[in-house]
Each structure stands twice: as structure tokens, then as C-alpha cells.
Length: 339
Image (cartoon, rainbow, N blue to C red; front, side):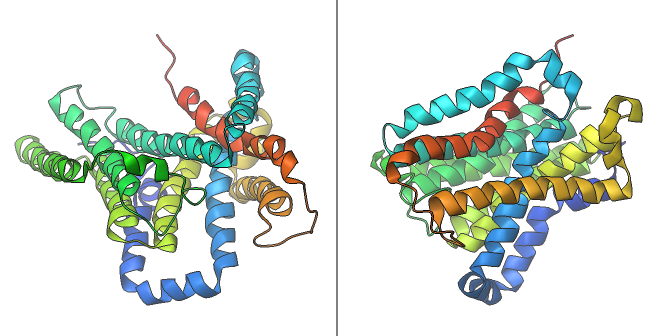
């Protein structure tokens, strides 16, 4: 069968499909070294993983939205309204306390991460008929992502999504772990059997779709359930999410578009343009995290500004606007226009 690559086998393989497999292999081979990395080089792991991957992937969205003049012109309400809504929502949530604010934001982020995996699966299954097989694939993706999060909610972990105790309020739910374990492994077995059956019956093998679903199972299970390590979770979570997203943006919004449709963005289409693209998103990411550090966290570096805590109720929701805008916009910008 013709494989449904987004760009080609090499690009998809390296930047979209392989990250969870490569990172997991590194984790198993260098567990002791990773612990040392976490203990002695926390600044550099923060800079590379959080700033240059996680936050940078947020700003890659600019190349599909705010940097595209015609797109903004057509959907002004969406592109101006979502940031305003994000700040207002943040202001309201912060009135219920910092922990409530971060807990809700974490749940929105989790939903965004889950939907990305579902979205990639749909892309790679776009040439397949809407039958029971595709339904099993969809259920498998949701199972691969939702089960580890439900496990996290009920089991103390050595890592956080944003802040300490963000999911503690969910620990008061009844103990559902035995039930979801049964469902999780049951769905996994059904998906494997279904996949093998389809391959044997049709003699066709959808490489990217199977790799995507397999990688999702591996990265979420080992990152959250199997290992209880902050850096391992960050490696698997951030790289498996951020790198594919950045790659998708560049492929779809720059590489695959005609120069006349790109206008000034055609500058980013050359080899030099790839590095310029990376430089732009890294610059935005570093500037945002610099503001977080000097105004709020003061963990990795500080200018000793001593911002009053009274200002946090306005400042923190404002600093979150780019991230929350990314989460909310992502639910709209990938939808196919109705025919």
C-alpha cells in the first residue's frame, strides 16, 4: 500500500514517529546517567526540554496563525478573542487560588496532549475507510493516553505537570485502578489482534499509523506509570509531544505550501529558513521563560525584582496567555473546513 506519510518516510520517521522510541531506548540504556543529569545539570535540562522544546512548540503555532495575514483577516474574532478569553479565564481561575488555577490549566494541557495523538492518528488513517478497525484505533489512542493519567491521579508521582499537588484533589475519587487496568490491557490486546488480523487479511501495513499508536502507548505508559522519575517523564512527555508538533507545523505550513501562498514566510522555506524558523520559535520561548523566571519563579536565574504576591493574580494569568491560547486555538486551527 502507499504509505500515508505527511511529508516522506525519512522526515516523518525522524521527527514525528521515532522520538518516543529513541527516548525510551536512551532511558533504558542510561538510567544511572539520567539520574546524574537531573541532579547536576538541572538548568540545562530545563533550558533544552522546557524552553527549547515545550515552550518553543507553543510558538511554532504562530506560523499557522498570527504570522499568516490572510488567516487572521478571515478569522479575526477567533485570533483576537481567544487571547482575551484566555486572560479573562485565567483571572477568574486565579481568584479561587493558585492551586486551582494550575490544576485547571494542567487538565486543559493534558486534554491538548491527548488530542494531539488522536489528531496524528487520524492523519495517518486518512486513506482508510471509516469502519470498526478505525474505531478500535481511536479507542486505543484514547486508552493509551487516558489510562496513565487516571493512574497518576490516584498514585503519588515524583513529577508534576506544572506545580506540586495539582492533581491531589482527584485522589478522593473511589479506587478505580483495578478496573482501568483491566480495560487498558484489554483494549491493548484487542488493538494488537485487530492490527495483526488486518495485516494478514489485506497484506497491507500502515507503517506510520501503527508506529504512532505504538509510540503513544510506550511514551505514556513508561513515562508516567512504569518509571516514577521527573526527568524521564519530561523527556518522554515533552519530546514526544513538542518535536512532532513543530515538525508538523513546518511541513504543513511552510514546506508544502507554494511560495506565492507563503508571501514573506517563503523566507523560511530554504535550508537557511529552517534554522531561521527554529531561531524564531526559540527566541520567543526564551523570552517568555525569562519573564517567568524574573517575575514569578526565580528558580534558574533572578534579577531580584521582588514582585509583590498581590500582583500575581494579574501577572500569572497574563504570562499564561500564550500557552492557554495555544491549547484553545489548537481545537480550531486543524479542523477541515466544511464542504
